Amino acid sequence: MIPVREALEIILKDIKTLGTEEVEVLSSPGRVLAEDVVAGRPNPPWDNSAMDGFALRAEDTRGAGPRNPARLRVIYDLPAGRVPKGPVGKGEAVRIMTGAPVPEGADSVVMVEKTKAVADGEALVLEEVPRGANIRKIGEDFPSGTVVIRKGTRVRPAEVLMLATVGRAHVKVYKRPTAAILSTGDELVDIDETPEAGKITNSNGFALSALVSEAGATPVQLGIARDTKESLAEKLAEAVKSDLIISSGGVSVGDYDLVKDVLGEMGSEMRFWKVAIKPGKPLAFGVIGGKPAFGLPGNPVSSMVAFEQFTRPALLKMSGRSDIFRRTFPASVTAEIKKKPGRMNFLRARLFIDDSGGFSATPLEGQGSAVISAMVQANCFIIVPEETSSIKVGETVRVQPFDSTVLDTEKYGY
Ligand code: AMP
Ligand code: MG
Image (cartoon, rainbow, N blue to C red; front, side, top):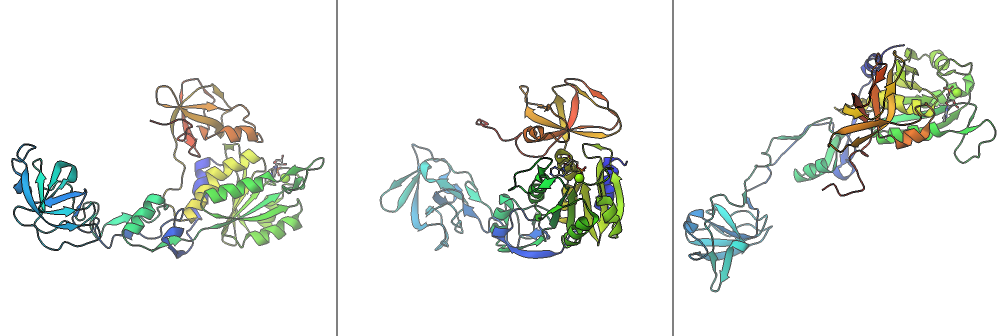
């Protein structure tokens, strides 16, 4: 039995990124950038107006006020998308729209609300305008040549905005890993069958598929392998066509727990098969035909926990992500926790923002490795270190949220 950290180090040592490919920017959300994106132009591209108003020379408004407005001659209109027709001279102004380039000679823009239109192409400015007012300077967001997004970043809508801003219609991303999923067990039936006596639905296959998708990889569903060497070997031969292999069940010490044996017979280099984690202790990891293979436990909660802690970081590393671990942080625990020393526990728990505005976590009823209802209520794991045996109410624990339900709420947040 090896500690969780050591298991992770062994796994990650073997994980490499796949190749890269070019995708259109609209296909890039969720993908991982395989290049530093460098701006080929400054933003803003030129000095431009932040307001609808008048571009003018600040000095022409010295001492102006509502009772003694500055009177300026409006020489032309400048809508967004047009270029200035000429410079702004002393005593002159240009009627400018938001986003239009600031004409030469003008050093400020006064918003239209602070002016009064008068006949004969004149405008009255009702206040003194500070130099530089309402002008967005060239490159104030970023100058040309700036690395605006780092390699290894997962593309979100904000990155799409940036890519589009710098005119990148295509971008280089890492290839998405494919992950073969196979479920083992003579007791398993498919989801559209009604389980007869002794049978259960292959729920892990579906959960693992969802986990793979959520990690940004592509699940390849191989279905059910029976508890025979032949059936397993046949499915595993198919599985090695994917970039990563995930099986569930058949890794503990029962007579029919064949996954380790068959992986071994197929020339897999087994790296470990027991980790000091609860749930999820029987966990086999090996490399078969150069492909990392995870033999996850059969109990549904164990297999989800093991995926989250071991397979997900591996998939993210393979995807090129620079940040591959779920963040953990301190929270106050609302119920007593007792456990046997020896294994790191991942308790299914509900994390929430308490009355003091801090984080609290409630361990859920039903910590058995087959209790699905607690998994559904949970939005985090409470991590209890190997040697800890009890935690009292109000003590601080580390929690690891695995979705955003702690941030989302039914109420307005403001
Ligand atoms: P095993 O590790 O194969 O001994 O399985 C441990 C427990 O997990 C048993 O109760 C199995 O029936 C259950 N199990 C195994 N595979 C699956 C699966 N794909 N979906 C749901 N439960 C499973
Ligand atoms: Mg089994």
